[in-house]
Image (tube, rainbow, N blue to C red; front, side, top):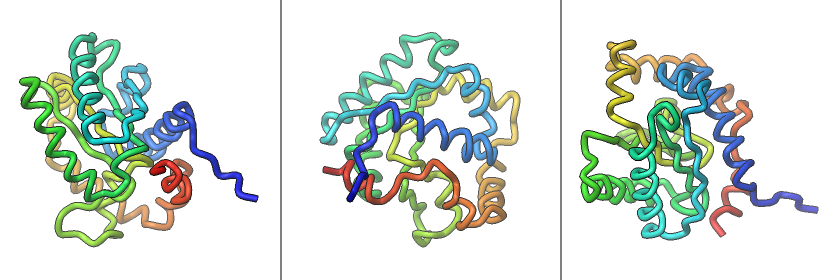
Amino acid sequence: MDTTIIPTSDEIIATTQSWLREAVIGLNLCPFANAVYIKNQIRYVVSQAQTADALAEELANELQLLLASSHKDIDTTLLIHPYILQDFLDYNDFLGIADQVLIELDLEGIVQIASFHPDYQFAGTQKDDIENFTNRGPYPMLHLLRESSIERAVKIFPDTNVIFEKNIATMQQLGLEAWQQMEFHVSRKQQRLLKK
């Protein structure tokens, strides 16, 4: 009997937090993540959006909420959208819409959007090239970052241009098999259920 069920919003957030602990912080893929994580300054939002327009509207609302909040309360937001853009090419296309939302709200240079997806693939790479896994998360998500927070972090860790190269080296040392054994992964079956 098939007991696979669609995860609840709380379960989706718990999986995302596990990914943050194990991969992003545990492998030191982002040297700035631990501080905001332990201070509970990350806002987790599980979008119910099932259309690009609905997600764009929610993105606009979250950007405005982020800027209306003190960075001590909400430093950054993870807008997790498990019910839409499961296909990476569709997700990649939506990033242009996300950039347009920033422009319309006059937030260029104030907020930037980082991207994570279970099937993330950099241009010029093969699907299973290890460098793609630096941007692979358990669900499609948009990471909303205040530029002011990035500037503060860069003062502490000024050599940010080496982060990407270091992350590739970390992933190469870890290897695909060890990555796949980490506990935050969402089964393909659950991903298919989320798409319905």
